[in-house]
Length: 261
Image (cartoon, rainbow, N blue to C red):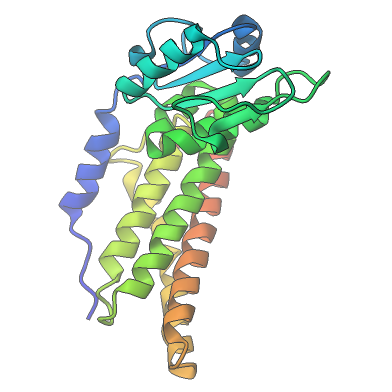
């Protein structure tokens, strides 16, 4: 028999999100930093994207380079690494250079004559921040879509893996449901929607929509016992993704309409 999800765990998640406070900003430095800030900060809350400042006071550092890294570039990148602040490098020279302290996948190369690829930069920021970027996404519209994409993919993948790894029938119920609940709450936070005691029942109703996927999984497991683990993982992944996309559309509607969740 599946174990019920402990209500105290739900309240713990609500407190965790509620106690997060105002997120740190995106710090942009280097040549053309002011121009990039104008693009990233379109429609953003005041101070959510800033020029310069200490990397240690930022959620993420976006360093603009005009070619091979200079001594000044290396010094700031080193400072960000010591402060454990993720870095996205933006190369305006039109070609890739090795950037110290930055993964090659976190270097965005601008195409000549096309300006800053804002969506690509936002996507890299969202990937680097993960769950920690939800508060920032609520303040910076350009980050909201990529952050939600990253959240849905991350939690769907986690549930797919968990469903395969847990062999005892029903034992995966609390794990999968807790991850689904966390996903929905993170999506709410990314849209600036507060989920409190009054709104929680509606959120839980949204979570309940995912239970049907587990029923389908149990039926398929009986039909294909040899590859049952693969079916179970696929259903958990697909169910969580469908749930996340439904929750995302709901919070987008709430945000646009400016009505209570």
